[in-house]
Length: 83
Length: 258
Image 1: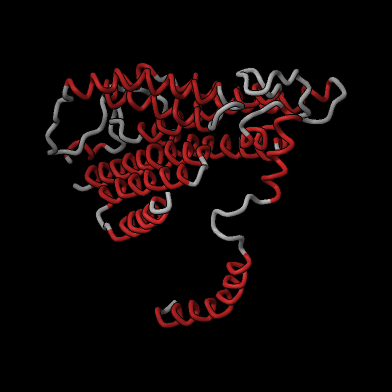
Image 2: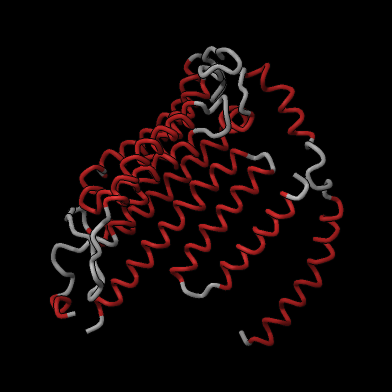
């Protein structure tokens, strides 16, 4: 348990930084999902299962999906408008 | 704003704010060591006063129920805004085809994905229902369970494709779920007033501690939140997915040549 928390905090920092450093929007969406998963495990380790459930459902499923669909819609509209 | 001015502003703001932030951080309780006084008080009072094992639900639906009512209508307003913005452009028609990027190969869905989704979909829905129903006993509740249920419907899209998803999800049902859930929550506040009690006072029998039926009025409020969140999030997914639908006729005549 003593090693688990620092490790998880480190992972959270790494995956959070990765979200910023990844520049391709498609990959960035998956980086966000991975960051959400790390945060879920961290919240669970800190004995906050309620927050962990919310983070899992919203942070790793709902938000990445909305981003992916939005990216697709933007791309499809852009290629449709070009003559 | 020039870059140099921005950096100067940042340094200035940092100089002002950093000492204050450092002072606050120094006064924080040490990491993970203590339970705050409010938490200890809640742990001591709630099991006896409300017969509820999940303190988070007790706080959300009872002790600060009015806050949660506000959050509920915040969600309703946000979803309504999304629907108004997105549906206005697309209209309400439904076609089976999803939009494709021109020139991109269409890869048929593999049987493994279909099978996986057909197995995982009902299981996800079941787990969502479990989380909703056990709001007062185990971690979770209407919001978490509702989001799990809503993301379970996405497995229909993944497994059956766009047409199957559109066939099984009806927009009007979602509207009814979302509005009905919020209405149910609001009624939970108003109905106690008919009996002479205060707004949102817990007038139902509280049930037994650690039982599925514990918490009284909290269970009804939880159901309202679950309905509203399931309907709301699915509606949100639906409206976003609709953005990738191919319009029946192109908006502009010149679009076909693309």
